[in-house]
Image (cartoon, rainbow, N blue to C red):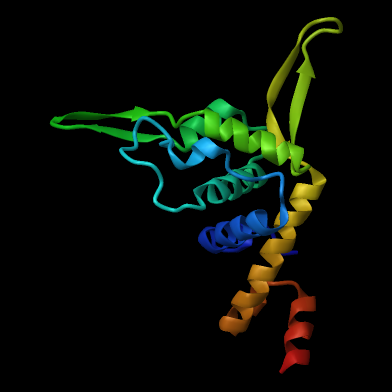
Length: 175
């Protein structure tokens, strides 16, 4: 079976962002998204007008590859970067959390992501460990990875050996 790990990240994120924009109405940038930087380490707002969908696709990919739930603070570190300070040494700064939180909320609303909540004691408070993909979200990402892998095999037939045997039959039928 072809998974997200088997396809190039740039092609996967681009295709998933396009899919989210066209087919998932719950994921859409809020009105303020056109005016915000993604963190204190950035000087300007993102150049790409569809950056919201690309960030959502990247978050979904990170959740797929993670072996455990990921929280907002971890995503802030993942998307953070060095802040240039002129002649002084650069310092690491975490990304802003608001856009990450809103994207995760929208992905939850779409049914692609779920919170992982744990209760420490029977009557104790609950603690959110982070978020993971739902089976529906994992299936969507696997489907898109499969489509990309089929296109890659059409472009470069030598990649066929990395795919499942059913793909070899499909390619033989088409030629």
